[in-house]
Amino acid sequence: MTPTTLRTHAAPALTLFAVAAIDVAAGREHVVLGLTVVAPMVAATVMGRRVTAAYGVAALVTAALLGIYDRQYTEETVPTQIARLVLVAIGVVAAVAACTVRQHREREAARLAAEQAADRAVLAVADAVQRSLLTQPPELDRLTTAVRYRPATVGAHIGGDWYDAFAVPDGTTMLVIGDVEGHDARAAATMAQARGMLRGLAQSVVGSPAAVLTALDRALLDLDVEALVTVTVATLDERAPDGAVGLRWSNAGHPPPVLVGADGTPGLLERPVDRLLGLDAAGPRYDHELLLTPGDTLFLYTDGLVERRDATLDAGLGSLVDRLHGSSAKPLEEVCDSLVAGLGPQTDDDVALMALRVRS
Image (cartoon, rainbow, N blue to C red):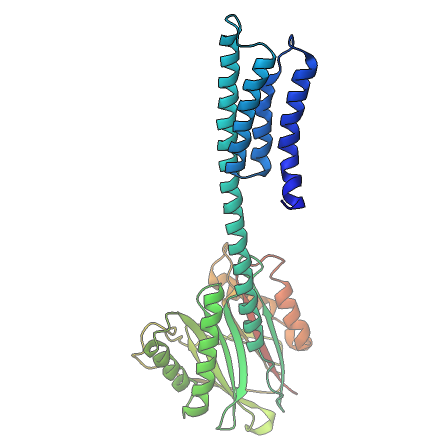
């Protein structure tokens, strides 16, 4: 028997011994043998059901033997002694029942703790994967860039929001801002799939952002990736004259970009929005074009920046535009920090943000 087991048995065993010693020391005139039921009750708090039952049997036997010492089996006292033994037996049954309930709760608590530990491990891996995919945008000659990612502070702390920027074979730089439905490890995994496929398709599909989105939509459906994805894909062409940058974009169900002019006037690029990805690959997608001039700032973001439970999306978009008024005079990093800080300490949605300013 190990030292730990001996310590566990010490409390109920000493309790039973103490009751017997007290009964004997008190003399035959003072009967305290009914207190033997305390031993299985003590055992029920720290030991298993079988051991508790064993201490219950020991308590009954001890009570019966002490009854002989206390002369409780005479014609006058035997009814009282039987009542005592019945009460001890009831106490033993109650102790075993209490032990059963305790063990069930302990097993349930252990199961929940194991599940929570497993969930935390999965979320930690998903969070690490998600953050590893949020790469810094490439250095651009005519553009200053800034990116931000903030996970939800309520719930799983991970989700399907992402941003990306990379060079494509036609000499332009492709920007991506996207959001996979859901806020869990599965959404993060689907985001990684969509991001990887989009990167690959962008290197091989000849054409515009709309063509890349069309190919991605078809790939998601053909591979049975069950997810709804909103995304804006844009290309930046720094070969425009006079320091300007050509912008071409296609929007698949995503919030519209915001353009802040060099004079500080903001506005939504509210072109017709195409269907989101994952619904139906049929039907055309469209490109939109704009020339960004020196001093212009472009903001791409996910819906966590503008959606609130107590307000409409239009109200959120209007608030964003108001907050960006005059921001062209402020450093881009400062503007992004202010937008994220304005969300407050508690958010139930992820936020991805990408900002680009044409150098003057």
